[in-house]
Image (cartoon, rainbow over all chains, first blue to last red):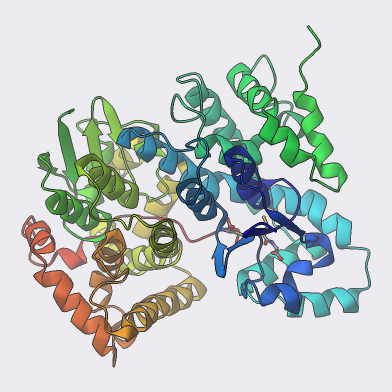
Length: 255
Length: 260
Ligand SMILES: N[C@@H](CCC(=O)N[C@@H](CS)C(=O)NCC(=O)O)C(=O)O
């Protein structure tokens, strides 16, 4: 039995970050799949681990860690294996800047679009009373608001437009940044790449007008390079829903 | 090692964190004072780039190193600390995670609330008194559309009541968290002095006048604030002030979460 247990959903967004970081480090972990669409994250067994009722969470021995980006930094510091942060202080600053920008500015916009187009529709047809009871069990008020909006499809046109605007800007910024260096924010494969891949792997599929081989060649090359890594293959093989198949767009044409 | 220039606002909020972190490390940097609430960070005389223009922190200090314009106070403090040889961050992986979590919560919850309340109290009157043409020049120089919107909202005094109430409660919770953390008699939030102390103090110092109820009956937090003020690096940073009370210096900052 490994000392590490990860509570996660699909390899995607916040869950995928520690999954991929652990795989890159070569750290074996007990995988505890939380089905977000069945509200597993609000059940008492999971609230005993993370009272906030959000995923992911990781236990290492008797310690509980939350917050996906901070978990990744912990994984990098606590275990042997390839370094996922370069030594140069300025590279480290740039990696942290990009991770915060993605976590707090760009990812919420992708997430809003994803919740409105995918999460909401996948649970909406269930019994309304059952859904309302499920919402009432959510510990964080902001997550209750999010679920209500997703289930009732009550996103305003204005907030959706703002999210789409940010997605467009963010794709342009990623393309520009990836043209500067071998990897995102440094010359070495790092946590910024792990974070960024989880955010961006489905972009060419979901935003084909904004991201394709002509408009964003560096972004596509970067995604394909990460998708080829054994750790990425291994991590995406852990997905259980059709969501993971979105990654197929990154397969290279056979030479 | 590359030379550094720190373009900083009055010692309050993110500028206070970075000025004090610089003093802690003893590193050499040229200091250039700028008026953040006059939009000077965008004026062309301050180096800029994607990291300053799109910084989640909004208006904050800029550190120029080797042709790169760097922003975001916690990460600038980490940069200075790592460049000088690590004293402001725990080395143990778990303690390090705790510090990062603390800073993240401060950045995500306390900072947007403090910026909301601080700007409402102090920046709105200043911007409202500014001639339109002058304000428009500032707006034209700001690359980020959402930061521009925070400037126009600030000038118009557009601060929704629900967000005000929520911001006040976030400040109350922020001080409570410090009080609880100090409950075992420790002097500093992470045991040893760290960037978590700097970032927490920098955002909360200006809240004593605006949300006094948050500090009432919080003896440990009050003693910690006194220790912070007495700390030589913080005193040195506060000495950079050019106004009577730097705690009244704010500029449009991080936005309140739009999607949890
Ligand atoms: N900042 C946290 C956010 C965690 C979070 O909100 N995760 C989402 C999934 S990506 C979640 O748990 N949603 C479940 C819910 O809202 O019920 C992190 O990065 O770990």
